[in-house]
Length: 344
Ligand code: 13P
Image 1: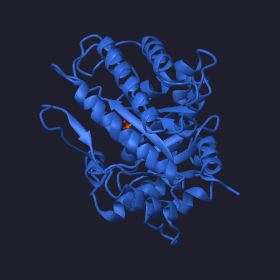
Image 2 (image 1 turned 45 degrees about the vertical axis):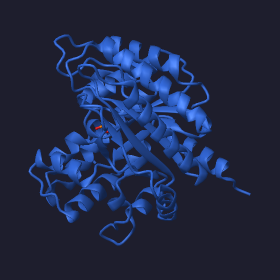
Image 3 (image 1 turned 90 degrees about the vertical axis):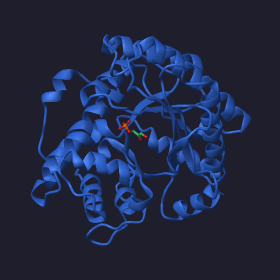
Image 4 (image 1 turned 120 degrees about the vertical axis):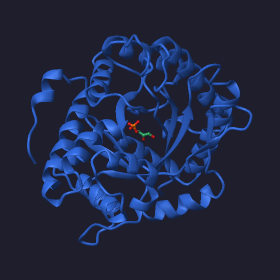
């Protein structure tokens, strides 16, 4: 008999396969609008479908892509030849996942801070998503650095929601990606990011324990420890890699099978180099991989630009970044590989 735990074990193993990582293609309709605008693409349902179909049919994508996080709309869309897009993925051995949070709202009495919503009715939605092929889920909490923030009130509220979401997913046999993102948009130093990330992860793992979440059947999706984008002093690759690993070793139990980073606004090359540097440092308690949105897709969106004639070029740009991040996952990435661009 396949229990929900053996099912989740298989899913987790597939998500964390060697040399691969997760494509976060779960931009909400509002977020993809921002990404499309930059490339002059109209944000229509057809373009969103075409764009995702282009990525998912990239020849060889399964060599470097273990799973894809979908937005709800995409989970129920079909390809041009009438195959559900989730099946386009699963037929290649790529695991389909689904973003299940419903975005953020301002937290009352905590100026400048937001909490993630979407728990009501989630148990029923999960059943629907599972029937449509989703095997893992994602919930993103947002922690903002600023004057006097984050507050413990905000970190605790977000951590509790993440834990309640994770427990609901596991009860349905769906592997939860637990994503507490400390934003990198402010002018803070890397050391502020370090302490906020440490506090956030400690709080998240305390809540996961309170809510009886099985650590063996989840994937953590954290930010890396980086300098704020507006900080005058930007930490180098090795400092980011070293400080990120110190925080993770202090806070993430070895029972967690894998950690898949978000890119959070880092440049494509930085996101790859940071992951590569961490994996080149030797044995770690968990698999360390990527679950990038922007850092995997930015060149592909630009190359495609919404034009049929650019389909293959868009795919080639996706494959290039996926391949380099796949190398970073095994600690074999070097910046010289950035020049090895191949057509598909
Ligand atoms: P970025 O890599 O663009 O930060 O997106 C990852 C993600 O899934 C954010 O929720």
